[in-house]
Image (cartoon, rainbow, N blue to C red; front, side, top):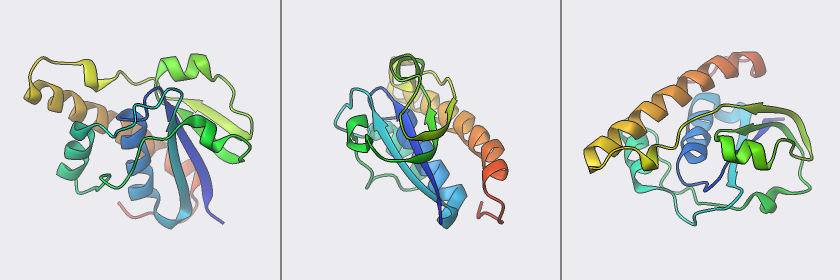
Length: 145
């Protein structure tokens, strides 16, 4: 049975979408991963999609969802990736364990497209490091990288 994970942020358009893609990529079939927002933006940020594509991970089929869609469900882990979502939802009912990975929103960094893309790349690398540190503690089998 896969380990069930929910990743939360405010808009569910960038950080949580990137984390969902990274967990799926590195965790493979050992994980069932979802993401949601406390106030969903309704889109996955195009720069998140582009940044992940640069690293061979396709998140273009993911979509922005409301946290309420997952109420009443049980998760092995709920991971908040933004401080606002962590403050708004310090405890998610149904979470066996809850983690907080404070991550700045790359959507608001830089004034040009290239500066913003660089911020998304930095965010992706930071989240990938956290995912790679996290997975060995929860997945006891060999994972694809």
